Amino acid sequence: MPKRYDQSYFDRWYRDPAHSVGSRADLARQVAFAVAITEQLLCRPIRSVLDAGAGEGRWQPLLHRLRPHARYAGVDSSEWAVARHGRRRNLRLGTLETLDQLGLDGPFDLVVAADVLHYLPTPALRRALAAMVPLIGGVAFLPTFTREDASEGDHHGFQPRRASTYRRLFAEAGLVQVGMHGWIPVGRVEELAALEGFPDA
Image (cartoon, rainbow, N blue to C red):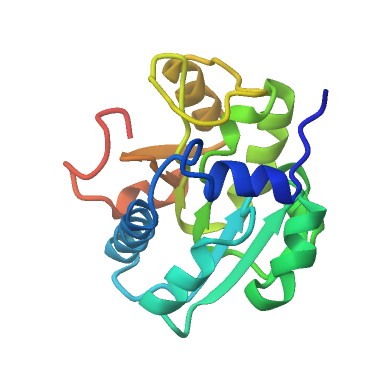
């Protein structure tokens, strides 16, 4: 049965204490970290953020608190989430595979795809990366779990790929890893200090 991203889905995985994974404090640390690594690369405060697979747009209020003047755009395939939170949190209906067809005003300093890539079948993942990479002006923050990880939460539709498979697919799309789920376009590699990137960067 196809997964439905309706109110019951978000209530179960984000608000029900019996099922939800990660606290608001965990999310706040994640947001602050993504902002920090992006600003470290750009040497300035971030001005724009694209949240791909944004769900209810939970990153938006936390980002606004950190950087009130940064422009936030969220994209999600949930009609319910966009109808409920779209106007207030600047969410629009779409998928990762269609990012290049949505008229987004990129590139963005920070592109986020948190906990979504591991649900995409490989052909869809390749299309999503191809659509996403041109929109990355600074850093892509892509928390993604692999078959080697002891992940918790929603496993329906989870694609059990190896970490090496993700590294290969990301590299083929033109991304270079900078650690802790951070990736940059290959064209920015020369901006890194020798120990900021991985040996093959």
